[in-house]
Length: 456
Figure (spheres, rainbow, N blue to C red):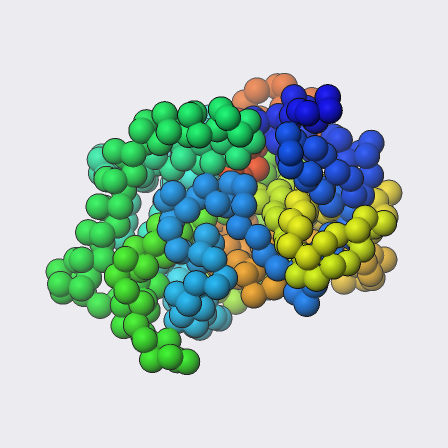
């Protein structure tokens, strides 16, 4: 339609999945008109790689990421690059994600893995969505803030934590759907939805403020964790400390981004292990050889190939925006400086031109060093790109490798719903991130092939 353009072709509930289907027909770059907005979609691996050139392109804060600022303010994920607090926080927090720090966090990760395995032993049928949400929240809380949220305790979580879970679920759905609202409807719907979660969000902020206040007042001992790093460290370049309101934003960022994206990855990988018992057996065998201490998990090559393949096919952040710094051409399109494009990672990471004819197939062996040489132009950016790449990517991969290997070691996994056995890939849903639709597993305990009590 001349005025409305393709506005009725937008799918507010599954926008990036819908775009993936369009890209199969429209190609590696195309334009959609939504009212007076001309949106350029980049869906091919080579063109997407061009958009990651930091000399020609910059990160753009738009879409669901912009909506997340409702929760996380100027945290690392949602701060604007020009905000001086972004650079300050990054300088202070970088050491908290170095190898030495990860060795310290491994103990907290292991305690959560123990709780997760114990909870699955007690339940013959498992809600994987809930289990992975609980596990990843507990990891960031215990490793980052030395707090046990009680998500695996018999008594259950405290009311504030239950508020956190409910508010996060509501805001994540709102962030995804409202990003694709019509310009007139969006503000109206947004105002109504904000009221629905405003009280919960206030309580979540109060809870986080309490965590910070307890540490500052000495009601909790000093800890070698992310919160301690933020409270006690100055920016090595400016000598300035982070203000407490920004520390709150960072804590909320780790709770939101640090759990949701990793939970999406774990949920996806567990689905594939249940669908392919031969892959689960290989993960189990690798665990038997390496063990579960820090070095053992860090060296799990096949397990990390499984994780990478899940991230390639189903990135938790399936698309991101980039703004042209200079006038340029991209795939035959004239792109003026200041124009923003959507890099559709979900399509670009499945591009047969850069990943081969079987790009849509889950095949972890493509990540072996020899096999990777077949794909010199491969596109793979599940953790973002440039200076704004995810600070916690090594943390997330270590956590995920530990959880997946422990589960494969402890259980034979089978779908509780026979319909899942008939699928070649998980059914995916969008709520800010891309995650499998909730599914259940039947877990049969097995005799572990590795000693859980070996030194960590």
